[in-house]
Amino acid sequence: MSDRKHKVAVLGILAIDLTFRTDRIPTVDETVKGHGFLPSWGGKGSNQAIAAARSGADVTFISKVGADAYVDVAIEIWQAEGINAPIIRSQNEQTGFAFINVDQSGDNTIIISPGVAENFTCAELDGLASNISEACVFLIQLELPLGLVERGLEIATRGEVTTILNATPTLNRDPKDLQESLSLTDYLIVTTK
Image 1 (cartoon, one colour):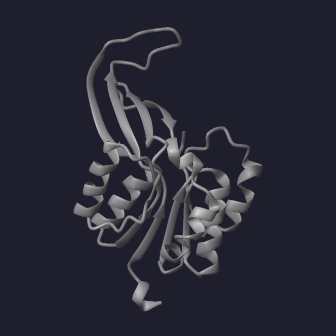
Image 2 (spheres, rainbow, N blue to C red):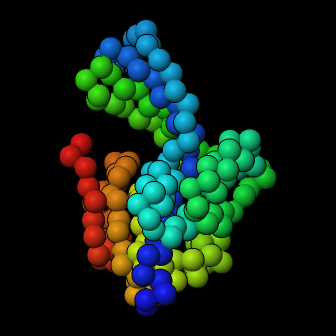
Image 3 (cartoon, one colour):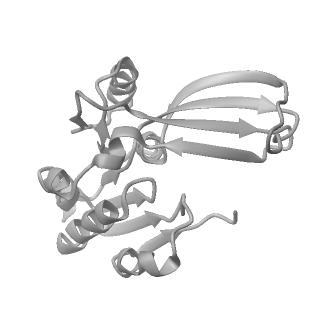
């Protein structure tokens, strides 16, 4: 296990974040004026992979992405951060997007469209399983399909890899649906909202 001491595997999505700043979050059927717009590369998984790499970990980020130009920039970012990214690239589907509205107090609302990552299959993940089983820590979030989350946790558990589940976004899932994932989780990250 010593040879994998600092290895972190992250399974997650790449999303192109479109962030708008407003004085307040608009209500239904209301238009408000924005005070800034920032496109950036995000997705919880991609962001967590970058944070782990900047903390000194040897990081592998596993994802399924589209064939659009946004992915080319993300790959350059991951390479610059020293992240190994054995991604699956679909020629027929779009990378994910997130619309983020942040008000002056810092509260936000987020709409996420996972794009091609929503069609990431367990069979595809099985082809990349060694990236998980050779790690010391496996990190996953709930932006992916629940079956894929469970499969990633199963692979990690079978390989005696420490598992961390960031249980967001819940996407209005019934807590009963998360029982299998939680049973395979060593550390659980939750948010207050």
